[in-house]
Image: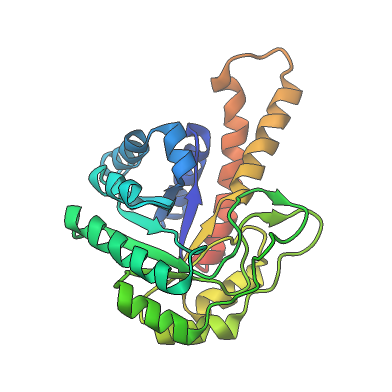
Length: 271
């Protein structure tokens, strides 16, 4: 099984995600990138998740997704985030190691229990609908040897490799197939839980195989955004004179809930 990680930038998507997880009685992680948490408010996002977790006694957690500076890492740790990702994937290998090690030390000096994740291998950087595979994505897949060295030197808690996955979702063609055998080898070499980023659009068969090979956490963002937009467009079309957001947004929330239900059933092997 794997835990689902779904990104938000407003309340309707947030409600759709936790409602789906609560319905299936499985844990879930809410992700907010630097841009998303700047829009919501980085403390406000953490507070939303904490309120649901405590008031409903439900295993919902918050992750500071794709964080690019040590200052932002510290900000998330101080704000009470459960986990944080330092993203140095575009950096040269040794520089990525050095900066990631610094990020781990900075975060854990503030909160020793915070989970720190990092990436190795470029898979693109935008959670949007794509006409083609992002330039440079997939050219360098993570090797087991690199993974072992990276984890040992940085002391990260979770590791996100490049294994054929890409951020975003292709519009008119299937997603690249995941390298299942490579995932298995990296999991054995790394010795820490693996995270699959950019899983929007991957087939249920590929996702199930990736979990079997050693993936413990799966990120979905673009499919959430696309569902949110479809739901809102349908609501606007059916209610052309409506101006009250609380009457229009439930359709977006429901569209997100359905996508999350489907994903969580795959991740948790539920029928």
